[in-house]
Image (cartoon, rainbow over all chains, first blue to last red; front, top):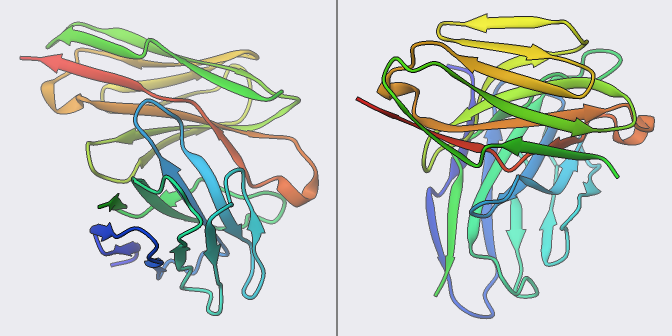
Length: 115
Length: 114
């Protein structure tokens, strides 16, 4: 079955600790995204990547880092510099349609809690 | 500034009571408008894409429509399993470097009581 997987489903971080969230897709999609979702707010873009070995900052990139070494994988690291990381993190991917990108498809999410 | 606003924030309906959710947008040119459904603790599930004013799409009890300023998600004779948060997102005609970014609304939480 094609889709997007995220792991872990739940993650707990101690103060000063870096943690990495995994995102893998087998849809052969070109672009991948990381969003943060907080209660009562729209999705906010953290980072995105159109091709391997290239990525761009979104609206709230401070305190986060990413890599795109393979087309299928786009891991997100939440660093200790992110002061309020407790949130629901969503990974998405989309296929480039020739002149624009199509609808984004999402993984199941990772809920990160700071202890 | 590009913006997407969804209303109401929450909507409670009785089973079978039809209604509509609104997504109004202010963007400098629309490339596409997307509707998603999100269940608690899960990732959003894609429903529809609309590209131009006057376009309509249907799926089971849901029908999405688009004008030059807003989109409506009409739900006909809803069932309890339609309870979810419905998200709207807009892709604006921006520069080529950012034509893939979506602007998201905060969502409408729909509750259908049996």
